[in-house]
Amino acid sequence: MNTDKEIEKLRRKVDAFDDRILDILVQRFSVVKEIGQIKSISTINIDHPDREKEIIERLADKLKGKLHRKDIMKILKPIFEISKKFQVEE
Image 1 (cartoon, rainbow, N blue to C red):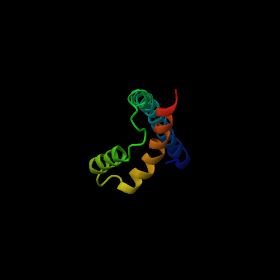
Image 2 (image 1 turned 180 degrees about the horizontal axis):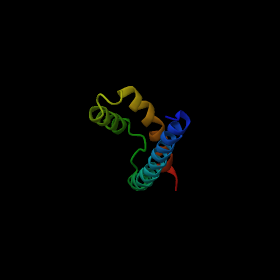
Image 3 (image 1 turned 90 degrees about the vertical axis):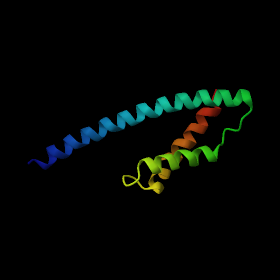
Image 4 (image 1 turned 180 degrees about the vertical axis):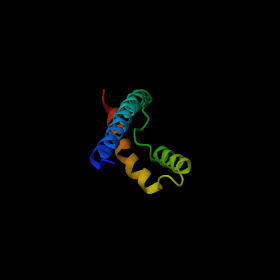
């Protein structure tokens, strides 16, 4: 087995996953922007820590044994922060 070729093959798979992840995040941010527009009209606060906790707990339960809760939090916290920015943008 050629190690370099095998690594390159696996890296192409990782690249494809990265592309899909970012495509999905763009879709998520689009929906979040719509939520922000509704919140703005309804004067609802953008910050919703209970919702963030709910998402983390749901995913921690779903992914038990695959990802630790702390790692899920580390992944999602920046996504939540970016989502909040999208909610206040016009």
